Image (cartoon, rainbow, N blue to C red; front, side):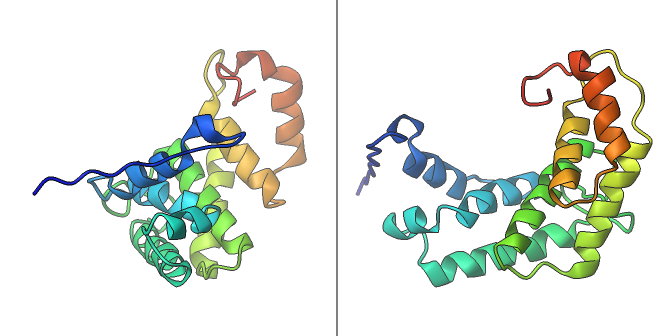
Length: 176
């Protein structure tokens, strides 16, 4: 027997099809750190949509976020970086993305182990400190600085330097 499902998005944000996007993320077939984070991030803010769609009740959303935090931190290296499939480091964008999720989850009251979070923040600080000079690019650096700034952990001198001296070198509007 074949089945189908339909989502409807209406209202000012209807063109974003939040229910459809949430459903697509929920059925993403792999389980690397980036994908675990991508499935869990919207649950921080869209638990009502997930509940209405039958993807998870409010209690289950909290459990799914907790499970994601456990799986993510299991892929954290000793230096605070994150690997896709096992503890590793070296991808600043992934580190910023995962730390962003952990920061948001923590702010919303989810249990994020202190040592894992502190190591993730320290890792971003270290990567910013050793970031090479660039004439083009820097989107991973901008993301790391945004996460650090939101946590009150960014060096103001770094922020000032990149805003004053490198603003034209960031290749994405989000980076800028």
